[in-house]
Amino acid sequence: YEVGKKFTYYPRWTNDHFAFFRSIVRAMCMDAGDELKQAWKISNEKSLPWSFDLPTMMLTGKDGHLKEVRVTWRNAPDLKNYEPVEISRALMLAYRDQYAKVK
Image (tube, rainbow, N blue to C red; front, top):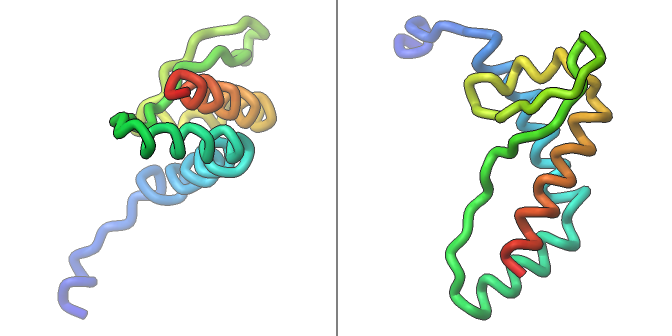
């Protein structure tokens, strides 16, 4: 209990990141799940090292123009300023592309 008293809750670090984490896991593992399984199988068979990279995506800004957004853990909570469906689609396509590179 003493350790818990020192805990400071930062909503941006937890709540906002959790929303992004939920979106990225859905895109990475569910929406592109078949491609992930194929890439994982090939990677294991050929002992290929690979990792999941946070993508750079083209998203429509509030001004209506497409802009390139390089996702980092620092700016991930700011994605809530974009259309969720557009983010989900862009994430899915980015991970499908990463998996295709493994194949």
